[in-house]
Image (tube, rainbow, N blue to C red; front, side, top):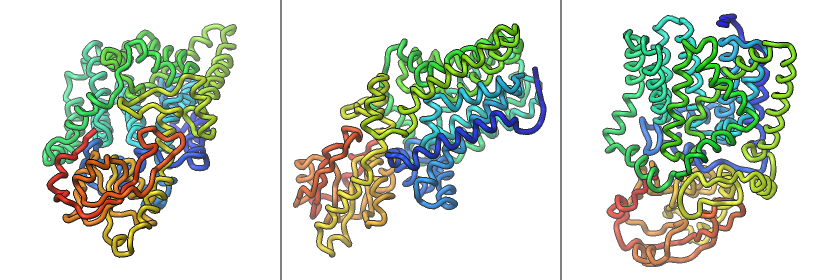
Length: 513
């Protein structure tokens, strides 16, 4: 049950290729544009640094590399995410083989990952979440190898991946927490008696050090961001709903597989070596339940391992007696049927109106963030891909109302990194720069030089603008169908002759959330 055969198994490799196309193509040829966070990542990739208010530096650096190779269009964002997804699908198949699965178990594991709604969602657009999920899977693979007898020096490789994961997203500490609980609660704690895990931790710390130094130099902005987000942005849900979300967003079709995988890790033939990995998942899940965590993607990185182990367990179970072999095709049909049912709410294959009706029928339009204007007919991950080019066009129309001299001096203010990123990227060819915002890392890139003589402002209150500028003129109303309500019916203002120094006001406008 510890196959070490070399080469890439053809079954999961084929599924990985199909998954790559599934993650990539619909988002490029369909009805939707860039996701709100993608607009921000493009801006961050144009301001490379060792840190940002709301994330570490790795994902912007990778995006800068991708854009240098693939151009500045949407392809440069979507190809890396889809590649990370395909690699995750392949790794699930490789993990299944490493744990003893044959072709059917490898197929079941890799297909289950590809058909998981949360997997499809995460790998359908560019974000640090795509790389986080891949890195968690790589770390799980390294831990399996260590558990099955690899030399302890492999902890150094684990440290490298963990360090890169920290440079990608700080929430990898959840994985480390779960692993620590699992190891301390099982015989795997014997590994902690050697120096190798600590050497791996030192390697991870060295890799993470530049971001840590950046945080110190900038007054720990990420801590402020996480604190603000936990109080004003993150949705708290009932404990039972946390579990229901895990079942729904990982698909009822894959539920028997990852539950079987959990049984395999905790009570299977290799459980004496692997039990700590199953307990790691349960420890983090318990934290989410107790904490009423409303983000089902927080522990998605555990599921490729669970599904890989599930492929092994189900293959073993159906091999135990010939009469059980019909379970395999039946489970495949069950999983595929749910895949088709849930596909339109995670992959952009339908127009917005039809997607909204489909999501409503499934009850799949959750509010993942707290606050007014956070509910929409479409799931948020689709609604936040709509209306950006329209916003750019409306702001460009406002700019056209200025005199040629004013157009040469105008600056643009946006209330969030989404609008700012759209004007920065999609509006660059129309001259909609420089763009300023006090939201997250955009705050660190401002303020504009004083005095501000003429500006175009999206959103904001006219009375407040009148306190800041001598002249306030309504230039238009931004109206977007199916976008997030907080962006709809947004006024666009032309303001002239600032009454105050914007640089003096800037610290009061800081918005880390």
